[in-house]
Image 1 (cartoon, protein in one colour):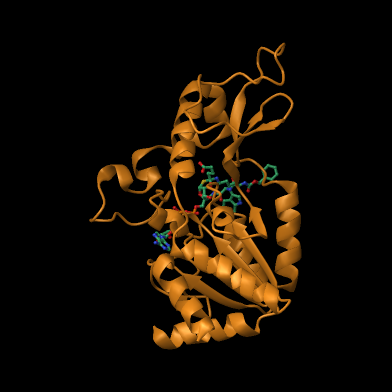
Image 2: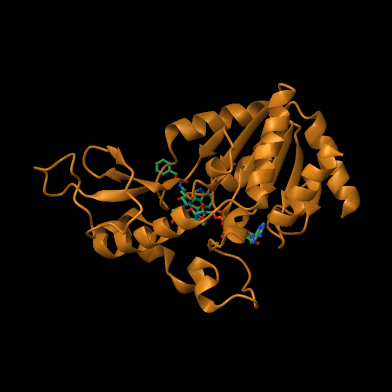
Length: 262
Ligand code: BJW
C-alpha cells in the first residue's frame, strides 16, 4: 500500500482541480452508522449499518413521512442528536488539510458529500457541497423556511412550524433528500461545474450505489480525471478506478497527508 499512498499523494500534489466525493463510511470512525456495508463482528447490533435494523422505505421517502410524520420525525431527531454529538475523525481533518494545501497553490478543491452530519465543515473544510442536505437543519413543509433546532430533543413529533402558525398542516421535516426527491438545484449546479474541470476524483467511504452521486465518477473519468477509491470493502466502482486503496479513511487519509508533508 505504501507505493499507492505515494502515487495518490503525487496526484494530489500536481492536480489543478480536485473533486472528493464522500459517503457515510468517512464518518464511521466518528461513531456514526453507515447505511449499508458488511456486518462488522466487532460492533454490537445497534452499531451495524442502519438499513440492517431499519427499513428505508418506512423512513427515508416522502411517502413514509406523509404516512407517519411523528415516527419519521422522531427517528430523524434521534439521528440529528447523534450527529451533533459526533466529532470529526482523522479522515475529515486530513481532507481539510488537503483542501488548505490545494488553496495554497491556487488549485481548486471541491468536496461533494452525501453525508448530512456536517462533520466536514466541523473539521474545517470550506468548499463543501451537501448533495443530500443536512440533518442539522430542518424546514417548514409549507413555506420552506429553514430552522436549526437546538441541542435538546425536539419537544414534539412532528414539530409544528412557528413560521406558519395559522397553517394547521405546516410541520418541520429534516432538510435531507429522501429517495425519489430531487437533489438541491444549487448542489447539482456546483457539482456539474466541479466535474467539468476536475483532473483528480477521489471517492471515499461510499458504497457507490445511490444515484446520481454514484455516477459522478464516470463523468470525471470521461473528462480524463485520475480516479481513486478509499474503502475497506469492494464496491461497484473498485475495478474501474486508477487506484483502489482498501482501508479505513481515518487511517489511509492521514498517511496520504503524511506523504504530502514529506
Ligand atoms: C468505510 C468505512 C471507513 C465503512 N472508511 N469507508 C439510477 C439508477 C438506479 C436508481 C436511481 C437512478 N437514479 C436515481 C435513482 C433512484 C435513487 C437511487 O439511487 N436508488 C438506488 C438505491 C437504487 N436515487 C434517488 O432517489 C435520488 N434522487 C433522484 O435521483 O432524484 C431524481 C429526481 C429528479 C427530479 C425530480 C424528482 C426526482 C435521491 C437519493 C437520496 C438518498 N438519500 C439517503 C438518505 C438521506 C437522509 C438520511 O440521512 O437519512 O442518503 S439514502 C442513503 O444512501 C443516504 C446516503 O447519503 C446515501 C448513500 O450512502 P453512502 O454514503 O454511500 O453510505 P453506505 O452506507 O451505502 O456506504 C458506506 C460505505 O462506507 C461502504 O461501502 C463501507 O464499506 C464504507 N466504509 N467504514 C471508509 N472507516
